[in-house]
Length: 369
Image 1 (cartoon, helix red, strand yellow):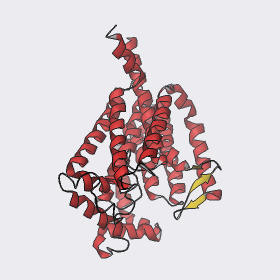
Image 2 (cartoon, rainbow, N blue to C red):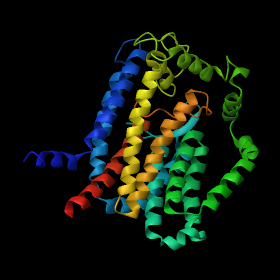
Image 3 (cartoon, rainbow, N blue to C red):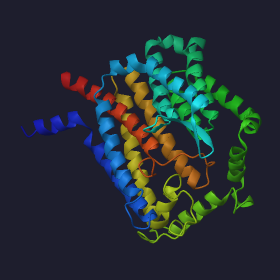
Image 4 (cartoon, one colour):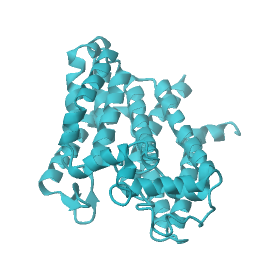
């Protein structure tokens, strides 16, 4: 009986991952509590509630059989693509971008749902494609279309960060499916050669972000203000930080967006290097679990889905932390489980829920032996 109880619990959820997520979200709520001047309103309380709601959604998604995801891959992708077209036609404008559909009772950002949709559709495609066909043109052009069309629509909004995230997940699936390495190297070469042209295609504010990334001190009080203040906050935290509720950059409002895109800088100022290492350790446990699920999945579809979604989560984490440290251009990517915002948390938890489903399928196959 004692052995049966842990087994039943393990069948329900990977509790070590749920605990890891709960610790990360709790730490995020603590940072948001401090950023609000020692108050649960308006961010910390909502942060915890959103996590509980998203965890319920992720748990529900984890019980959906693999076959249902495969059957819904094309209809789901098509519906989200139509929603992106709707954004271009009748989308709501806010913050200088046209990225939302106003449904009356809520605002929907279809581009967030396109991230897992691209991964699922490509995983379904490569699971159907014979391995020999992945190394010829028939294995490449469908992936280019599935990735390229939504990326183009999202770029029009404009939302460079989300467009890149869609591409990262799709390219990961194509890579894991076995497409020849020379294609990826060739695409990288073409991309590097086309950088000047791509730069000219960016909006003015996006061009300024790239230039500020290359030389943030050129306009410290203008376009470079965000990253300059972020570096000051991170550097002033040192190894042990200034202490809980003792941050100055965020409390005195020198640090813009200290509760969203630049929450890592808010954390680093008060918790220092130790706080950053705690985050990296938690993220590392989550990513290690995702890759192990991908490696152990019994089906090709499961391996590709788990790998692609894990890389999507990694992109969120890596780009945000590189961005706030001045090692990548500012692209508006929030930090999972730390930044205040419902859309990003929902997207990441959807990815985690699907990976949980692949994990459950794997463990069920092993228990049935």
